[in-house]
Image 1 (cartoon, rainbow, N blue to C red):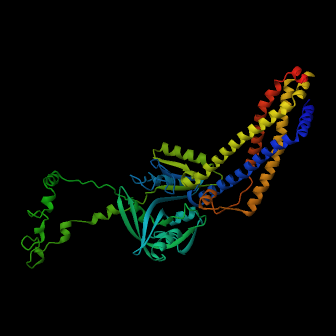
Image 2: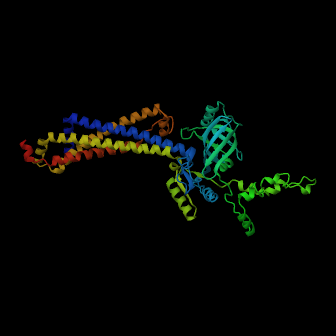
Image 3: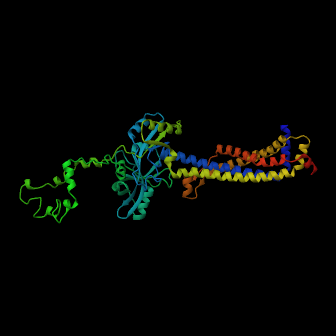
Length: 502
């Protein structure tokens, strides 16, 4: 019975060559687009993932639970904020725990920030800042930067390593080239600590090996200066422990009584006048007043301007290749909860931010468009099959009259559709694979900056996606079956007597 159905289905397709070619060509074209498009998207996604994990985000990014975005690249968390970017709590404990795990290859704690650059009288620019420990950074991300002039930061050395983009901005505004050894002023502003200005020495200039518009604004800076710019101090609040007498005294004094000039306040104009001077003109050191005695002991100021050596915004973790990233993140977050640490672990995509996510979004959009095309294909194929069934009313009626059951008719039409789907689907997949292989050998050059970001670089060399081929063939088969449902229902309604009478 199965052989008979196959012979009849094959004969019908052969006799209706035009309709068969129309349906088949549509299916082959859809498969070809699916294979080429998904191969492009998957190659770009894998390339972006590999680039970010190896060079910027690692496999896991740890932040404070209060951090809105785990992105390292200023996706709203570093600019226009009302509060300081939260630091990771218990960072020493977290780092010790990570170092105890065999699954962890390297750890790179870092600090994010942004600052206006000024060089000389006219040179200005802007930089996103990565505050890093040089040794830990180079161990985690080996060979991800290319030094163009000077050197990278050395352990314990203060200074900044400027991106070539920042150097170009300064040159465009001043006409001068920033060189290693020059000084630049960094101005950081936020609503909590106000304006911070630091003068730092340029130690070198660099480019990322895997450059992109998102990364070209990043410059590296030492930890002390980035912490000062961000207000990450060891002592942020100082309590004034005053006695009852001191508080009562302060309560009775106002600004005029302290600094007023009309009535000769405590620090008024008479302080240094000839008549009211606190410094006698008589000779002898005993009558002379040391100005520093007025100000009191200032030795404690250094204590309250020290930066917090354990303050970090991010902790980037690289895992062993055999480790399951999602399981590791789940276990790490459970450990945070069990130990009462207000931190969270996220995957590389959260750390990569908007640009990397955009690539995934475009893949979803592409597949949605393909779905629309598939729906259109179903409608076209369905209409073609309906016409074919109407042309074969007499044939189908005769089959029913001589004993063919409804199941036989249903199987015959469904098999016809599947044969078209499989044969032309394989042809479309083969053509798509050939096109992908040819483009992969030549390379697809991104036409503009936007496509460079999406493709993960200036040139994409797409690789055939086996998953895309399998999914495409399954999809076209499902499309064929769906398209045959309505024509089958029409065929089953044909009355044998009426069909033979026609």
